[in-house]
Length: 454
Ligand code: BES
Ligand code: MN
Ligand code: MN
Image 1: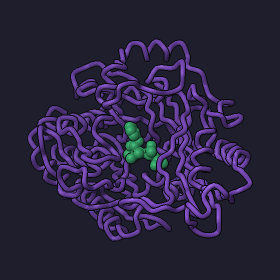
Image 2: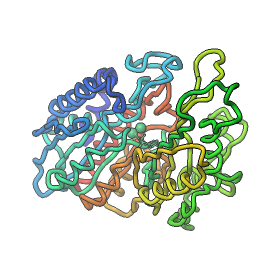
Image 3: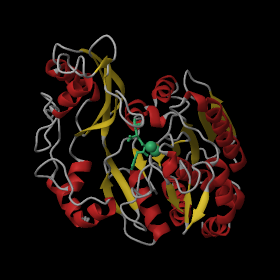
Image 4: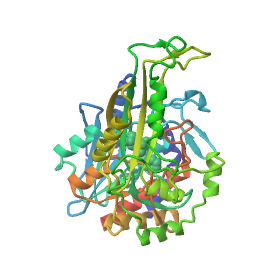
């Protein structure tokens, strides 16, 4: 095992050069114009899996973006781990706020800057390199490994979900290993045992049959922007409580044990506010920031569109306005039920002066993972060995939609062994990945394969 670790240590520079090639591909899943880049990226991942030593590599076409599958099943009698990750990335806007172009990876202060660096290409690559190191040094893996790397995580994983439903045999495994989350703090080995779910809605409000002169007509018709913002303000009260009926019905309370664990993390609200550049934090009254982001559901407007947004002034009452609204959900909320209650409530608070169109864009179930499973134990030992420090267990505010499907359809546990940092600007300009964490991640992955094989 020490030889594998030394090999990984010695090859850092090569790994970084290869990662750069991965990061150069603009595999933005939500934009139609990047369709070819998505395909190119799937091919890239497939070729890296082949080079790493996987015996079977296949690209599965779907109605959406291709899935990359790889396997090596040369350790009969040993367990099988399925490694999941995503090669798609978020859009880059606002592009003018990037210090270097998002698809021209740049290294500064031990960090690599590019869209997808931490979410999730850098993290996917760790596992490919750890597997490769085993083949190069020992000629085999200590257990059976499958990879499923998808291109639609950032848009809800719709086709991977269908694929899993139809290919439970192909994906059969004993556990799923995922690196698509964050460390609690720089240099601190971390396992995430909770994710929030999501319900993402779009509300379109239409008023008059055309744009109108705001002087001639203003005051006599409902302005869709005014109406919509009014409706949005009715979704939450002044204490940050969400006003949708039945919204909180299924929310699990924090157990005493978890509460103690949260306290041990010694989270600094002050440091958090300072890092975000805000004078004061804001959220649901009576809860700490960790609780607000990990165990409480939320509602946020992600974007609002309507009227004249160009330079200077134009006096106009627009015909239409729309908003994208997401709700982060916690165990045991059900996204389908939440979407229904949201729709009902929004219809109820809309005035008769406008027409409404409500769309359910995508959703994810919340996740809570037991810490007693053999794969979590292996993950803990692996990270502690790589980092030389004691593990911490955390929950996370973000979502990884497919986790629930793995648990339900493959009936196996998952381990969330993420190496990112929440300060690494995922989904925003200047996304980056700490190269020391990249190195420790490859080692953690290698130790995991070894630990879990035993
Ligand atoms: N890797 C993130 C989830 C995440 C974010 C984990 C921060 C840990 C820390 C993932 O790629 C993501 O962004 N998920 C989306 C899912 C959605 C588009 C369905 C999310 O949470 O918004
Ligand atoms: Mn991700
Ligand atoms: Mn993401």
